Image (tube, rainbow, N blue to C red):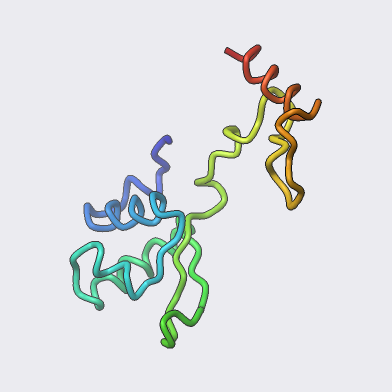
Length: 116
């Protein structure tokens, strides 16, 4: 993933925090600062900066009976190309169960093979 101008302005701790959020796909703020091994105050400052730069999303939530925030990567950080084979979306996206013997699945696999 390429580095954005906003990321170039981040401190080492802020970059570690952003990487943690991206790797986990989402983490509660109450666990975030513990994972980074920083104080809750410093963790909150890191989160605030990342949210201000629109590098993460911060949603109010309840976790283990306490009010906290769920920190998640912004959609720009997600690589949706991994769900595609050519112009076809993976048949595993959605609520329906996919039959591995189905034409949709076979076509998707063939598109993956032809991309290589």
